[in-house]
Length: 181
Image (cartoon, rainbow, N blue to C red; front, top):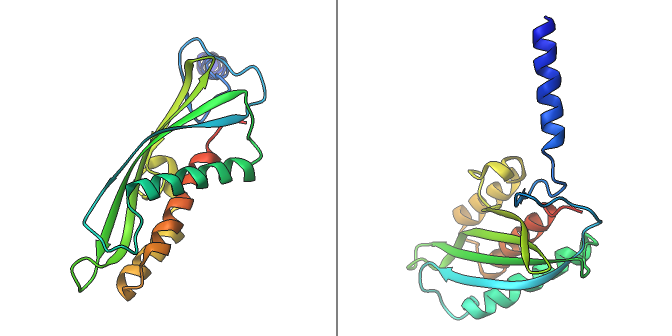
């Protein structure tokens, strides 16, 4: 009993000592959070993949503009805008379509992102993932209703460019939810 108590105390103290303050981001070794965090956005890369679509859907440049606009809005809504840190985000957006007429209906998207928190030119913490898909361990409990909406859009063939924009806003919002304050 005594030995297990000592082990428990050691593990508890180790866990406390290893926190950097950047959680849930993964901190770069040697960096610890020392102040309240606020962010300015630095646009990283943005790529679009998926089937060809008609002109009612934005192209890659349009989607990039939309995404970073949603990201800035989410930063403002969460009240973490400022100049203490730079947030550099890169996104690989995959548009998935379905439909009777040659993949004409938006079905879902993959929003694989890589996010870096930068201070004075040094990367101090990173995060990555795909917040839109239930298989992503970081977001498992956040996607139940989103997945039901996707299924509904696919089954009713009602997905459109607005549905894609909803997914993009959601990706930006979930990414900002993870930012350390």
